[in-house]
Image (cartoon, rainbow, N blue to C red; front, top):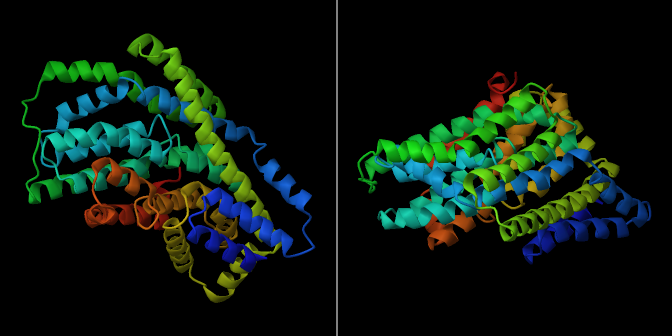
Length: 419
């Protein structure tokens, strides 16, 4: 069955079938290829996977991000950062990195980050005369910080599949996210200085900075509250998601006063549609995962690795290479759900903590989001900047260096993320 799943899925992907539909087609073909798997049992496995309380967090975190960034907050956030660092070498690009890092605390979706921040910053970069391709590359890479800074939808999916602690994953993702942010900002400064990119030449306006900072502070406070609530056990991740949505609604209505019935309706529809897509991928991936487990494919891979690869560092390297490769072709949610059942036995065989595996997987697959041929944030920012994808890819070299450095730290120095 494993070979049938592989060939049908690859064939469906080649003809550009949506990932969820390709997974469903592969699952049905595998089930039809044998009389050992009743179709009604396959459907039960699909439905059972989405009957999970932690999954309720996904639509609420998506709704939080839409409410916070769909109004005046985005402009205030960009305003305070551009006033602070827009004058330095690579400053406009650094504004993009910091904006994505702060936006990561209210969303959890790299695609939403790339769309929201890109639509705000790319026109500003162009008015400054900034290279459009470098702007697109910066925002494509920086958007993936969103899935490391809590809340993170991929981490929720990993926890659902591996039985890891969502709170532990959220806390462990903070340091890699900040390291990625600092590294990307350093690269923006270095490239901006070396190539003498244009900067915002306006003098620092202290009063404007304080005004923007005060205006944006309610949103900046949200990720801090999420970490505090999770770290000290005040609320579960699902409860935190609901509370964050309530917080976002109150801030939009009472502080920014831009929450109309139309915007609320649009935000709910957007969150509902996005959640529907994620749930369809979860159900299809659950069918594939159950069939692979029934076929004992994950256990077979674990046994082969244990028999042939004896060094733990080499096992980690092989897992990283496979995740990097598959992340270039498969959407991140589907990749998390498909790879987790395969890598959990391998990680357990070398004594790796599930939290470390989850962070390592998210960092790996985040790199795939801005790597061709199927880099989602890469295509979004290139389209917003109106440049060819190849031009954007040529500007991504420094960002890959930073990302691989963080990946190596997460993979081989577990003490850096485990507490």
